[in-house]
Amino acid sequence: MKISTKGRYGLTIMIELAKKYGEGPLSLKTIAQSNDLSEHYLEQLIAPLRNAGLVKSIRGAYGGYILSETPEKITAGDIIRVLEGPISPVEGIEDEEPAKRELWIRIRDAVKEVLDNTTLEDLASHSDDGETDSYMFYI
Amino acid sequence: MKISTKGRYGLTIMIELAKKYGEGPLSLKTIAQSNDLSEHYLEQLIAPLRNAGLVKSIRGAYGGYILSETPEKITAGDIIRVLEGPISPVEGIEDEEPAKRELWIRIRDAVKEVLDNTTLEDLASHSDDGETDSYMFYI
DNA sequence: TCAAAACCCTACCAAATTACTAAGGATTTT
DNA sequence: AAAATCCTTAGTAATTTGGTAGGGTTTTGA
Image (cartoon, rainbow over all chains, first blue to last red; front, side, top):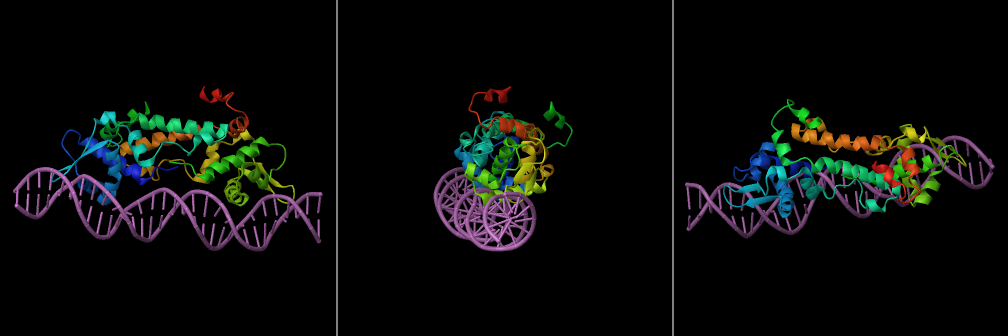
């Protein structure tokens, strides 16, 4: 019941891109260094994000990646689905017997609700500060 | 982001025990056969449930397992925690930077809410019928 | 022009986890 | 005593995770 580094690092990449949105491309090297991650590994994670149309790449010197859309239009759910597969606590949810099927559906919907209502704008605007306005999440 | 067969089969065992609650012990062999699962594998799953005090074992001929408490006092969360570990989308949630930490906390709390408010009584009473009163879950 | 910077692609691999199987011992009831 | 059942340890094949290796190809600033 865990989200792997694929989804976690993918979110990290996308949050970095959101923070620099409108300021030109950001290289994977920069993202890898500032987050202490393997650039090669991030390359493998951004490939599906590019194929899914969430980011655009700009090649050559001073190139990098940019978001395809504004940060408020991309959700955590978009990213997690691309890197982790469908949001569901079990595969073949419809094959389960009624009681368990209902349980899985309720869990799935609860997680979807959070992921699909959290945008990159939300995430980028809260990633620098400390605890000061984290109360916003609890309203 | 999946619950493995440990948690799923564990729930299956516990739902079967809930359905027979008050009618004496139910053997793993019976549970394994009626659910088409490996008895040997179920033995490995019920061991932690016994150690956690969720079930009691009765040895010898005509023995088996019984719930330690009434079905309404045992939740899906109790079972999943024993077999899958802590309910959390990532390990070391507190080590994440603020934005992601808040996201993981919101997901964790949403899943907890469902698992801790679904009892074995709920699950056992809905496991025989079809779709007829599944609307109860949506109120 | 040209070399560096960056993206792109295909393998491969070690460690961990999952999902069991195998084999037998311990305990209790009939 | 025999049968039924719980209980325990060990091994193992398949899959996933979390990368590394080693190369391309494309673009652009100097």
